[in-house]
Image (cartoon, rainbow, N blue to C red; front, side, top):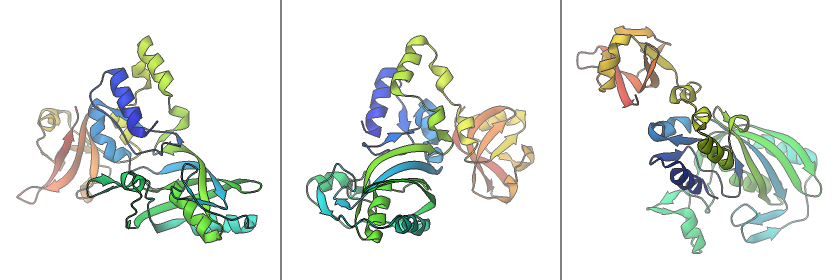
Length: 291
């Protein structure tokens, strides 16, 4: 089941028109896939900014055209490097770097997804993209060729490409065997639910207990601004107010054009930012009203 399949399934089963996810998960992978419902689909771009944590099984000595086990075999190599060399490779691919995405990906080129071209036997040049791998931690080695590791990385990182690149650096080739997304931003396996659990909760009338309020989902990602209660009517209509109405600033007044969760008292109003009006006075301006 693809990430899009999950969205279509939930839209149908929950009878909700607006459903979206916050970052594609490979069809062969499992794990955390944050889902936004209703108005929350408008904050998906913010939520997907969070780091991802993956647990990966890398098969060394094998290269495929998809960089996972679903693809056609390109080459095999039984000369598996030493454990020390494998651990070194994981360290080499840490930090900020450029990564070339795989052909079998949902990235669009001239309106067509790369995997659609790949299935026709067409390979095109892909521009490397800047990613950040904060940490890759060696977990285990299962002879003769399976490496298990955990990696924390920025959005847009392809773990299949990471497996390919590690295998290439080691000189034996590498292919992703299995992948689990352990966390996406503040969402983890521990606070996730299966599709069956969601359907059961719907039938029992307890679906709301599974939902995370928008302001809670945004809390670890963007700072907040709390305005006076009397600003609620203006803000609810998308109008701007002076920064003098801020009760809690969180150093917001010194950061122009950075996004914030906007509250009027205890009420979450939406997403906004600090800007200047025509008279050069600082104002709180709304980007998305979500009340």
